[in-house]
Structure formats: C-alpha cells, structure tokens
Length: 273
Length: 119
Image (cartoon, rainbow over all chains, first blue to last red; front, side):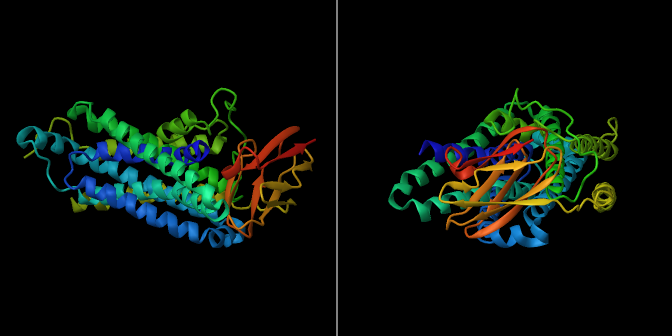
C-alpha cells in the first residue's frame, strides 16, 4: 500500500504544485476556482483517454508519439503561462486597486482563466495517464490483494491535493499587493521549466540533436526523481543532468517572458482613468 | 483590450516560431543505430543485462508481454516511456561512457530491473 502511495504521490507532485500556484495567482479573478476545477476535471478525463490510447500514441510518428505528444502539450502550457503573465502585467494593478476599493475583484479575467485552466489540465494530464495506467495494471493483475494498493494509490492522490492546498495557503499569506508579483515570477519559472522539459522530450524523440552535451551532473547531490528533486523540477525547472540546449531554452523562455511582460506593463506613473 | 491581444499574440507567435526553428534546425539527427531487444514478462526483463559498446548511441526495443501496462524508465539513461500491455516501444539512448546503467519498470521498481553494461 505504501509503495502505491509513493508511486502515485510522486506522479501528482507536479500537478499539485501547479494547481496551488494557479489558484493563488487567480485568487482575485472572479470564477477562478470553477475554472481550476474544470481544468482538473478535463485533465483527469484526458488522462483516461490518453491511457486508453497509450499503445496507439506510443507507436505514432515512428515510435516518437509519446515524446511529441508531451512536447506539444508542454509547449501549449508554456504559451498559456506566458500569456497569463502578460495579462497580469496589464491588469494586476487594476485587480489590486479594485480589491482595495470594493473588496471585490472585477470579473474580467475569463480569458486568462481559460488559459490557466488549460495549464492545470495539461499538468494533470501529463502524469495523470501514468497514474491511471498504474492503477489499471494493479486492478487487472493483483485481483483481491490489489484493493489495498488501490487504496494506497488514492491516498497518494489525496496527498497531491494536500500539496495543492499547502501551496495555495502558503501563497495567499503573501500580501495582496505582492501576491501578483510573486505568482507571476513563479509562473515564469514554471514556464521556463516546462519549455526545458519539452526539449527533453524532443531530444528523446531524436528530433533535436544540437547542444546535446550534458551541462552538469548533480544527480549525486539531488536526484531529479526524488520528491524534493521533483518539487524543484516543477517550481524552477531543476534538472540533474541538463543538456546545453535545455539550459539555453530555459534561459530564453525566462528572457522572453520578462521582456514581454515588461513591454506590455502599463507605465508606472500613469493613473487609471 | 483587443489591441493588446493582437500585439501580445503576435509577440507570442514570434517567440514560438523561433523555438520551432531551433527544433527544425536539429531535425537531421536520425541516424541508424543498433537496436537491442528486451522483453518484460511478469516482473522479469529478458535479457536483464545488455552489453553495449561505450560511446555509441543505440536503441532499446522493449516488448511488454503482460496484460498490465508498464513504464519503461531509466534515470541513468534518461528515458521514461509508457508501454501498454502486449505492445512495444523504442527508447533512444545517447552515447554512454563506460559503466553500468540501470533500467526498470517504474510500476514495479523494486523487483523489475535490469542493467546496461557499457564497455
């Protein structure tokens, strides 16, 4: 049971953190919880579909289907996160102002909510299919003794939800006027990490083969597959053996996001009409 | 509002476009590499030990003969692929230095393991 709990929990660490961050980042945007839940539900549904077609996906594109699929959904997530940060740079100040004035936020963020719901869905989908297949595998091979394993699996899922709650509760302690800055920064690093991970998949698929040398190896210090490694992998894109291309794409993504949010932020001194 | 969307979307498309260009630039990487076959039945890999020459990229074709899906993974060799029941996948391994590298079925990590020996 404990083994199942650990397997499932470490698969849902990423989704758990992403959900917590998204909830905090959109705290003041009306309807954000509903959209987050929709994102989770969509991700779970998507996981079941991907799990059911795992064989088909794996053999697509001359065996590179899984990698291309993962790289594609990660790229979409990176775009959505970038778009959210631009939107936030534009409207964050208004949101904080409205919060102060009326205690309520304006309900105008539906587009960024769709973008973030998509990110949540993708985060759930990424490892969700593995969880579904793991539980399915137990169910068809271990019969009666599988029950405690399945229970362990669900305990792992609940712990993932707990991680979301912890992340959210931690972040909302940040004062409102700093919260958007903090979450925007976290989202930028989240996006950079995801972009680097997309590169990992393209490299695994054999589609990209430049700057492929390993930049460093810190697996002796902090293995990427450990729980702390996974948390850092999600939060800042930590990798224990990144290639130079991953590093390059990571930094480029950060630069692009910072440049874009800066260029779209309203002038600091201009008052809102 | 609309104007912002247009502008930010354009900037985004530009960013994504340049990213794709990087990907396409490296597209010519499909060399024919040696493929090694491994079978997973129950919780045993056959063969459980693969000998490969050091410094050469290769492929591992993993055939899962169980009803249950598996996740063919190696932290040492940096791959992680879902293998549905009664199907197979191909994992790509970069040139390895000399040494031993472990692979496993992540769903049964403690028992279903094997080694690649590079020399």
